[in-house]
Every structure is written in structure tokens, then in C-alpha cells.
Length: 299
Image 1: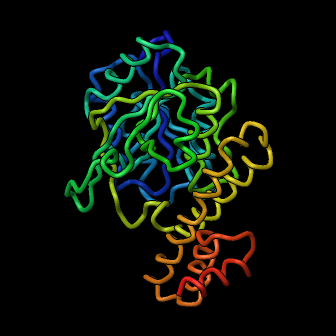
Image 2: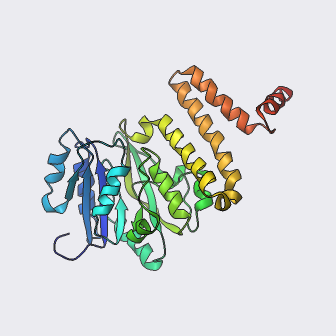
Image 3: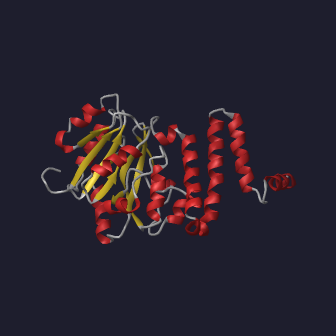
């Protein structure tokens, strides 16, 4: 947005070696029917043609560069948030795309309920140019006070949230300890303080490819999700107490997922280790020895 007036929405894009995708991403933002916006791109130390591609948009994109790669999107996201001028922050990654009416539809929701802490939407998933699913078909959405629901699973597509700047001012920025699960941690943090809402229509397009961090670093994602739950149990015991059973029930699902991951990688020792953790969590009894006896008697 040109001129001296501050935009209503700042769209922030972190990127690292994303020259292959970022032009199309930016073009879908510029094609929004909602025009009161600015784009802030933070280059996380790219070594390809990313700077050249992004700077070809000239004044349409505010370009910032970090010299040292952080290994994830959350440090550059925070840089972009600090540089933003909008009253709302919209998130997208450099390899994703938006449909033209996305921001219009979400800002309408904020107009109906200005107390919301986050508005998200459904998204199409693409692999090799082919539409394969919708996010809400895999993870059904929830609205309102969704804290307990988010403890069960992350159902907020990370390329769709719009968040008021006042929320970041109140509860802080993304946790820079994380490389893959920082968005999930932030949705949980928002949901502890604010209601959220969603648009049921798919308003974005998520690309599945070999460079997606959540696909490449499955083991790291497991570790980070465990850290999120452990932090919740330690730092907010009274608030978490009614939901502790839900959190502990979540852990076996991750153990099982890790067992399957290592089995596909033919890492049989690790597969057995995580499957053992899964079995010990789901069997009845108060201790591993009780669980083993239960398993023996069940057989």
C-alpha cells in the first residue's frame, strides 16, 4: 500500500531459498479483493535468487533480510511483526497461495466480532500441482473458546490465520525456541486468552513438497510438541488441571506416529522403542510392570 496512511492488514512472509515459489505467493496477495494491506517479506538468509524475485515487486513489498538463517519461520516472522504497520497480521509462507477473497471474508468476521483473537479458514492441499484434500476434511474446525480442542490436535491451517496486532502486544510473539511447532504453540496460547472463529470455505492453497519443514523434521516436530505439553503442565498447573487427561491422552498418538515414521525409514530399533512407549501409555495400570502384566494376561 502506497502513501502515508497505515494499512489495516500487514501480510507477513518469512522465506528461505524460496525463489521457485515466492513470486506466485506474492501475486496471490496482490490479487486480493481486499486492498488495504501491506506485504512484509523477511528473507532468512537465502542463497538462491529469492532477493532478486522479491525485490522485483519494488514498492509493493517491504523487503528485510537476515544474514544468518534461523532454520525455521518463527524468528523471521517476529522480525516481520515488529516491522508491521497494520492493525491485523495475516500469515502465509512463501510457498503457499491465497484465493482472491480470503482477506475480505476474514475481515468480515472480525467486523462482526472485534473481540476475536484469531480468524482462520479452510485450505486446499496440493501435491505436484494436484489438489488432494481439504484441511478441514482431515482436521475439523472449532470456534469459540477452543483451548481444550487444540489440546487434542492442531486444526488451524498455518497459512490462513489473521490475528489482531493487539493480541501480539498482549501475549507476545512466536516462541523462537521452535523450528516446526511454533505455530501450534501460538494457537494454543491465543486460545487461552481469546475466542477464535473461522471461515468454512477454502481460502488458501497449501503446497505439499519435499522441502516442507513439518515433513522433513518429523522427529523434531515430535520433540517440540512434547515440549509444548510439558510447558503447559509445568507453567499453568491450575489452568491445565481440568485438561490434564486430554494432554496425557495425546502423547500415545505421537508415540504411535513416531513408531510408524521410523518403521517407514527402516529404523527398526527406534520403531520398537516408540511402539513400546505407545503400548505402555495405552494399557491400564499405574506402572510399566503393571502394564506388562496386563498385556500378558490379555494375551
